[in-house]
Image 1 (cartoon, one colour):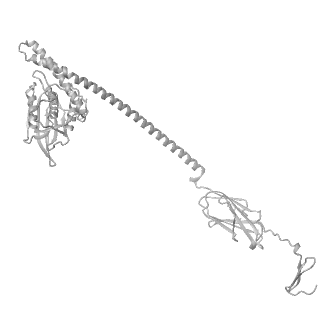
Image 2 (cartoon, rainbow, N blue to C red; image 1 turned 45 degrees about the vertical axis):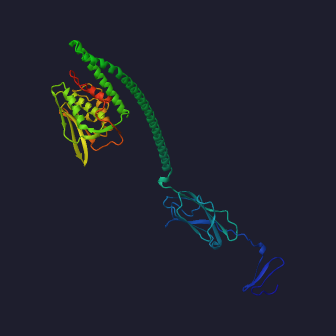
Image 3 (cartoon, one colour; image 1 turned 90 degrees about the vertical axis):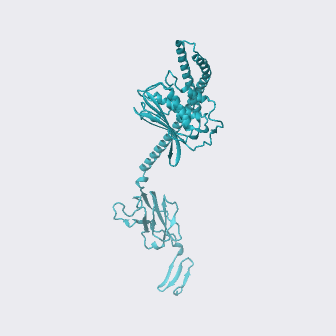
Length: 467
């Protein structure tokens, strides 16, 4: 073997490699060189929470942190983990790979970095693992492990979730119970509605039956009244028999009067009563009704007065309807006035540049209690008082219905032991375009309604037929 120059190399037959250097010849056997090297074990060197660090001197989390548990509150979920190998001679040739189990199941290469920062990690249990390798070699199986637990806030804790579950169950229970009660209430209301409809239909059927019977009674009563009137005009009858026949005639007249009122009330209630108007002298009609009651008055303690306070009495009106209204109001006034005055008035008033014609019936009788006033127009209502008179309780209800049908306004004012005033207000210039307009003279043959009002008048020997 000769001299070697600096940088020259050669290999011998037994595989020894020789190379020259400034210091002389160097040689080694490549087959005996171990090509596989292992780095020193990786160690987690530091765990930092924001700017606060937990190091080896920390009694709670001593270093090294391998296989150590760390617990953090939910608001300290940003932290940094530092790691390294203890062999600093090869640290520059070491590569690191890490994984945070529970967040992602992927290994990441740190690209030469020796620390990882995790930001805003949600509450839960995590395991941080880091492993190493020398460049261009396989990853080591030895790993450094750190268990991290981030506790949830109290509103996300297990007992809070239990409370939420209980609240949801209670809400569902409450909603279902409310819905069930709602269904039960709707079902109950539907049953009541059907029962009410059935009762109403049954009541209507009964009323139709009674109305039909009442209507059938009119014919025999009319046939009875005719012969009785003939007998009363017979001068050959003895006073004894004439008085008995007069009593029979008055009773039959009263019964026919009641039947006619029931039929008129039913006609108004079932809306079969139609408004039939004609232009005429309303003052004349008021005068005739007032005079009839004044002339046939048998109570010397009661004085009747008629006041026509306007000359503008030519208006459109339903004569039959107004007559029934006035007869009922006058009869009612006479029933509750044992002594004093009953006044029937007609006047013209103007309000808000609108002209009205008012008919009023006032008396100085017993009056109506304040608590009874709102109910006096209810059908079958009879106020309880010491001056209670017999009646059917449909008179004022009929008056109210006819007044509304005539597009009028009916008002009442009353005070106990002072008197009562009923006022019917009609539009003076109302032509009633939707009503039936009569084409004949007011001096026509009396209709059934007029026969009814005639039957309502008092007789010479007996008081008015109150109801």
